[in-house]
Image 1 (cartoon, rainbow, N blue to C red):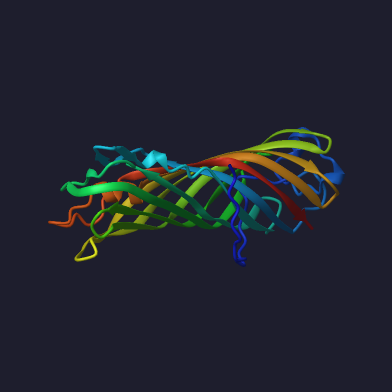
Image 2: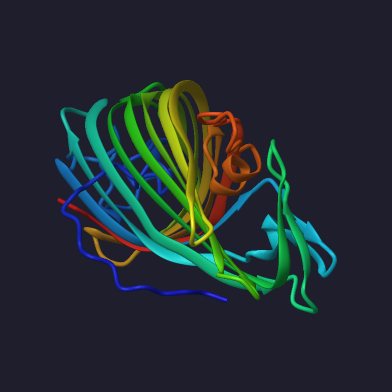
Length: 323
């Protein structure tokens, strides 16, 4: 089920590698003057390109057991983050027929789901942490999971052949994750909250190509990989109503990113394209809230593990304007 949340508008632009551009290698497939192409062999190169599109992405990560007890288990996959709406903005400036400067902004804010479990007669419930913690007399556990994704890319694109472009540049990602629980019992309710934060800085390289063109229709695809330094940190707070105990820490890790996309394009006018497609993105060595919680240690704090990975995939649709 799609979940829509009102988002504040952020002024940013990016080069939409995942959309491809009508300027890619149209000479190989034959050019249509009405397509607004800017490739070599298609006449005058358009100087600017701007685009915006809606995202409908699902986020997934590893499944872990968080609580176990007399009334059952509570696993992280019982939170169904589902598909969430977001947006992308892009901009491109063509220096000449072969080289271009690019910028891209992507934002999904935010995935969210709540779930209740271990409902039943009062019994013990155990947090499956590095140092397990058992809570007596628990009658139910209510949890909430939230996640955000933001990405900024600055790059250079260079034509290698009539149909292929090489892309390279800088990328910054924010991946934030939060999970919280309320354990109801005869005594004062206990709450547990974990916030995980990732700030990734690094470079990426990729290829994009037009795969097919006929008249006003075309199909293009892209792939890119990157290596990033991740400034990861987490904070886990256990509040019994009487005492508060915290496990927190931060560390740097190297993360790997891979992104792929396929897009169909329809020229509406000589300057305007409608674009729809599908894209996937995988990021390794990140801190995920559920994983940090099960690695927590309230006796000897573990700091941050940051050994999980996240996977995003979904549909995109938008418009591009060239002039």
